Length: 173
Image (cartoon, rainbow, N blue to C red):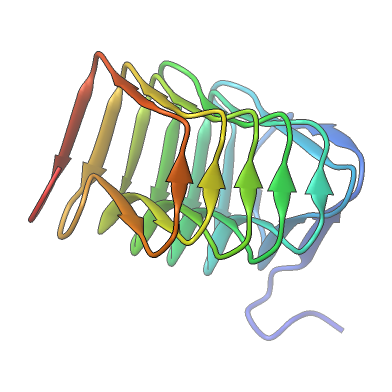
């Protein structure tokens, strides 16, 4: 039977490159997954655009299209790792009503976060006791429409932040 919202969930455990637009109930990357969203393609969900749930993503999340969720664009759930990093290419959009990109407690992005497009939400990028050992590099726009552009909370660690673009927030950049 179909899910209550009419959309099916998608869970990836291998490499995947989009070839079209996806509107699904959830889009989850499991252990061993890698995701490439090609230019002009979209992933849209009523919750989190793309979730990394409790595993190690050996590849990267590489976006040149649009990843959009009514809660978060990308969320790296507690105790998850992305060794290849998160890249939002020029023309790429990562949007979540609450947060563009959220890194939860105990998670690590060893490949870093690189933004050349638009990462936007109430908070643009939020680290809640997570680690981005590869640092954050921005040459695009990181926008927190109601809160912070980049929010680093608790015992979070970031290698370094390099900015040649725009970082702004409703309350703080």
